[in-house]
Length: 389
Image 1 (cartoon, rainbow, N blue to C red):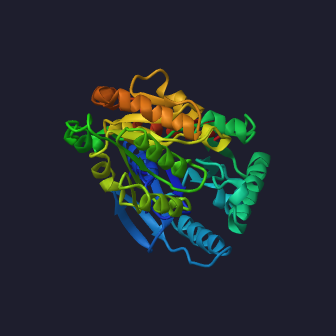
Image 2 (image 1 turned 90 degrees about the vertical axis):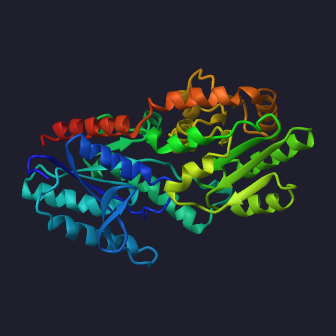
Image 3 (image 1 turned 120 degrees about the horizontal axis):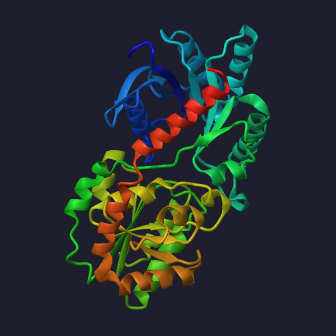
């Protein structure tokens, strides 16, 4: 890399082994195309690694509850201090705020203007309070504590996944740098869009959900809606792919579903399109709650890129993207009756699903990681100008 490139060090505290790894990897790839030098860091064996064609740096995180973050961040800061080119920006997520607050203090003592420290927020705590365990409550308490500290100046700036997220967290205007939503690379789903067999849609409609199966996403509720719709004479089959606390409920429903429900553990990201290919509709049954309203669900973009029609609840994070798109079947509420009614609409319009999938595929070209990376780059540039960097 040339020495005059803007240098971003991007610190992640979760390994790149989930279904959402494209967020970090493809955005890094696009930032590099835009002329940024990006040092992407994630917990892994020490050294350089590659996933989905993108290089990143692994730094070991010990498996010791509570203090593992402290050890990991000490190793990260040691790594950053040894870099040949000093970073202009260090970007990180909620677990990193305390560690880099001390780095910010050290920068101020030395009189330096760089690096600037920016927090990126992608999600609110997701576990419902009524079933949250001790660790969930500790994480939620920590999240909102560090949010207050960040708003008071523990970081130089904050970037969020959506503007409603910034509003929900009461981020002061002088610390809010901008937003960058989820996205997709449509060409990564060419095989799924091109190889789908629509010939049997008149006999059976195949549904799919790929993503987190944590509680509160209405997945078991939707599975029960599928069972009820089939009891009423329709013919749906749904596949759930992922992992999380609601998986046990889904597995119990699978046993009693007569074969119309399939539950599959998480799969590698580069096989997602193979799981989407047999399906006709991708589902997004999330409830109308703040943690979902402020989000930007990556699976919405991937379903569309794969040429699937979409069945979704009519909540802000869906309507803000889809608008009046003709490729969606809406569920007006996240109740059993409403979900069954939406399935009835899908069944009655099943011969139009192929055309709906084509429209979704066309729309997906407007929601690329290229566009998201450009928004992120603009936010970082704005923040650096604010800080005189």
